[in-house]
Image (cartoon, rainbow, N blue to C red; front, side):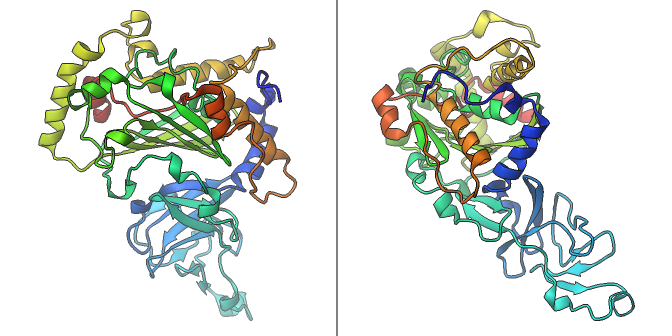
Length: 428
């Protein structure tokens, strides 16, 4: 297949019909990110997640096990639970006060004897969905008989960082939540675009050696790793902005930045573990949420490393931004690669509405993941029976190494540059 041309027409990024098909056939048939395991600590803690056209609730049962149900009452279909909450003893529909226990069983109906004579409550239960935990992340699937998570992520673990997310800490002020004016697929394509890293992020991601990145697809999922730049690694103790991840010993150093189909990226670095989650809102808007976990550290440890990094950065890594702009409104003056990415993605979305042709050619190697991703989209939208079998991808890890020897991912690697910027971001 020709790697040069897009497999998706412009309508794939602008059409409501396309958007609805994706919701039904992709998001309704794949495992979806719901949250982190610590989000639901106690019995009765719950959250909701949209799986395509289905709203699914996940709740910690009295037996401390996670359970997933479709968030609709069996009476008239009203939603039982709002987005997130704590310590529910029972599930009560706000419409007519039908009551379910935490196992989803109907246990009370107001006016039952008069209004519903003969109704057998024991035969009525909420529609079940699937839930599981992988790498400390809660995943849900709208079907009760979904393939096992181990099957969905089979073979991927060897391409991930050595991090143990369960023991890392999510500190206040480190989360990110923003609506981006771009189709969700444009954001994914940017994330897995290897070619742009040395160009768009020439100043903001220069702590990594993009020429030695290794990437490919494993089943439905994209994997990526690149080592630290020599100068950054040589002075890592002085430049690293946060406490080093304990598992990131010298042989493991670098950035691991996989994309888990369809809408979750991981960013695993020497000092952070991030999730990058996309929620498609409309054909041309996407909500981006980032959550960050780091090593346990005291305020004194944080301040000491922050001061050391801030003092050393410009001396060792150099000053300046792309185009040397100083305008506060210029994303290239922000020292924030996320701002650079959002600028590029929103520009591409606007281009989708022009009558002019825009896709001239994809880079033969470093944009090859984009074509593979587009092939996945085609697969999921045209597969008659969504059995979640692995589609035939355009390239895999062995062909990646044959083409490149190594290459890089277009990703959202943790912000490991100017500490003044990082500290300001934490205050927002």
